[in-house]
Every structure is written in C-alpha cells, then in structure tokens.
Length: 246
Figure 1 (tube, rainbow, N blue to C red):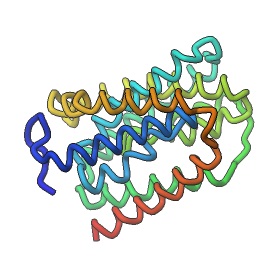
Figure 2 (cartoon, rainbow, N blue to C red):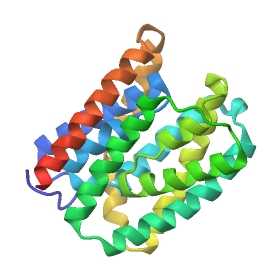
Figure 3 (cartoon, rainbow, N blue to C red):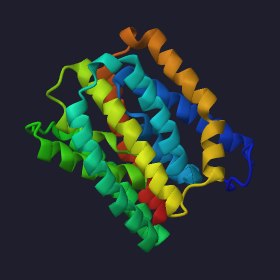
C-alpha cells in the first residue's frame, strides 16, 4: 500500500484499516486494562510504519490517561516514581538505538521486542516489588516503549502483586507519563514532529469509540479470552514482520 503523504490519509483503504485497528486496540485496552499498543503496533509496522512509534505512543498515552483518570484514587505513586526514573533511562537508550541502527535491523529488533513482550506476559514471572525491580522494569519499558510503543509488560510484571484497580491505575499513570518522556526524546532526536502528531490526531475518534464500547460490554467479555487472543495475535503479527523484512 502507498505511504501516507498528507492528511487525510492518501489511501482511504489504509485509513479504514488503521481506524479499525485502533478501534479494536482501544476496545482491548478498555476491557483488559492493557493491550492497546501490543495489539496495534505489529500490524501498523507491516502496513503503515509511519504510525510506529510516535503516533501510536501518542494514542497509547491518551488511552492510558483515560484508564488512570477512571481509577485515579487507586494510583500508587511510590512505585510509579521509581518506574518513571527507569523509564527515562530506557528512553535515552532507545533514542540512541534509533539514531545508530538502519531500518532492517530496527525491524528485527522491533519484532524481537514484541515477541519478548508476549513471552513476558505468558511466563507469569513473580518478582518482589522493590524499588530496584520496579526501576529496572521502567528501564526495559522505556526501551521497548520508545522503539515499539509497547512498554506495558515489564511494568505489569513488576506491579502484579497489587489489587487489580491499583495495577490498572498505576500502570496507566506510568505509561502515560512514560509516553510523554518518549515523545519528548523522539521530538528532540527528529523522529517525531507535526506530521506524526496529525496522524495520531486523525485516529483519535476511532480510539474513543473503541474505549467507549469497552465500557458498555466490559462485564460481558472475558478478560482471559481477550488476553489469550491478544498474545496469539501479537506473536503472529511479529513473525509476519520478520518475514516481510527478510
């Protein structure tokens, strides 16, 4: 499909595909608490690489902000601060990688990090929620989030011992603030500008619709089924990106 040149999308079919993708991703996020960028990033990287990472980080930050606001009374600020310190370090590392790696190695790195996110989610690792561990999770989240827009899995693993409302709210706060950090660094390094911002803005309406729909039927959909489908979809999409790059 042709690349996007200006807004509105140069290819109406591509815009429709991306709008459906963003709507579905926001729905998954609203039902399961995480998953927006894990669902959207692999497919966007194949069909519309202009959306990765900046525009998806913008949209993902917006969705996680909505999640954090909805359950703001449950945010645990102490681990959030530790994670954000680590996220800042990881973001710098990721921007360095963007500046020194060609597109083909970046595609392989992207696919590898997506598969790592899937593996981390499946593994069910249990680690103590210490300041060091949460900070390290923030570093990994910063690298993954800035390069691929998928930064949730390390944070979720580090905070998994918290009650679900605290986990969702704190993760949302971390990912929103982390997205801002990543976007600032991408802007400074020349990888994010008005074009990327406008691309994200164009896809805000389907994102809001998807998030709203999730609230209407959240209690009727199994989060476990959503999670399994999400992880399978991500793994297949990441493998597809590898095949496309070869």
